[in-house]
Length: 529
Image (cartoon, rainbow, N blue to C red; front, side):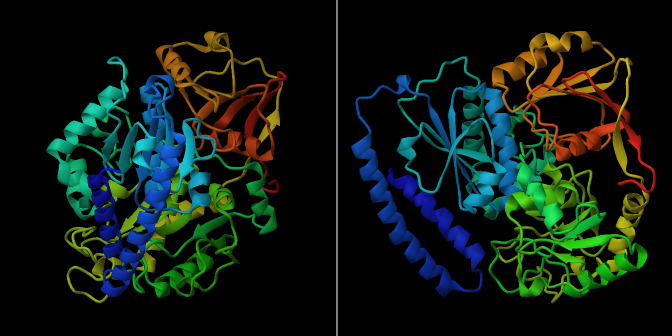
């Protein structure tokens, strides 16, 4: 491995340990020494394996080129990166094999990227020379290796991205080096009209925005958790106390006060006694909350957590990865905002709550220990202290009223010859001529399938059909946003598939099944579930 690549990884590790142990230099030093020893052993093993398995005379043109993406940050950053990777793959039109490497738990990463058609592998260790391109992504993408023998056709769209990234790094190198410069990166992105979700889209070539979502597939059997935990037929909200799983210090000032959490739970119960409160996240002593109806901390897999969040009427949390996950599931969160910027990190559909005039600015990454102590010297940051349970409850009161009083919808079979108009969704595999009769100025056509190729997606877009990857158990559309859904023959219309279709259909919307049946979305009576 080239020497400067080793130095870059060493630099990144030092930065990571400084953040992980800001007040424990001895612990950081011991961890660094151990990492260096293990890094040397692994690098030698990989290099020997590489020399034994690769024929130096092999022609790179005879194999499909490979890209390694090294993803930094927490679970929320990985979810944001998964959207970037999907749009990257679609933009370049395929033709490359993607691998990813990250420090996050393999089970979680595999669940985030489940069924992604562009992903060849998730690797724990990697030799740059095993790949043709290596891109590091924490906030902005940075090319850290490119095979000198790689020949890409000049007409290939990947050249546009690689040129854009190389030019950006030459001019804005400080923004790409580490999260030490996150504050500058946030300012740069805001000035260019970006949020955290579109920040990696240098040059805006991929079209990332707040409405661009990743593939987030949920396994069918994951929904068993709803029955097992007896929340299947309840109206429930979820709540978590935790903002950064990787942060190892005893105190994280980003976390809302435990006493505030307990008081908020009491206020919600007093005002909405029929609403169940389900706690999720890791089981830690500092997250034991009073008045919780169902405690699922440490009791769900990542896929089961998806299922729980999918049908939560509201998720309450700090600004963290679980909020990003809820967004990908079509849900809504109410989020405590203190040290981070609402207009950069907050999702527009969420209830983003911040104490007014508590602090003049925001302090994310202004100092290395911004999560350990208030930059202004307060024991309890004003941005957290003045964000009271009463203030937070008033922000979510209307939403809680709506979800506890609305009648549940249902799908009812109806013989109808009415021609659907408006936003029409085709989910599954359809022949090209299936869309012809519906292509009219008054209609918006969408086609979601896990089997589409980038070429098919681009061809459909040329016909004004918005095509993308999606699974029927998690359709990337807002509630009540679709006028009709057409399901292809291979779709399994299970209970939760029908529940998802019902969610996205407008009242009076139509479901068309492959056997020719039609179903209309209607309101249930108050006694029906």
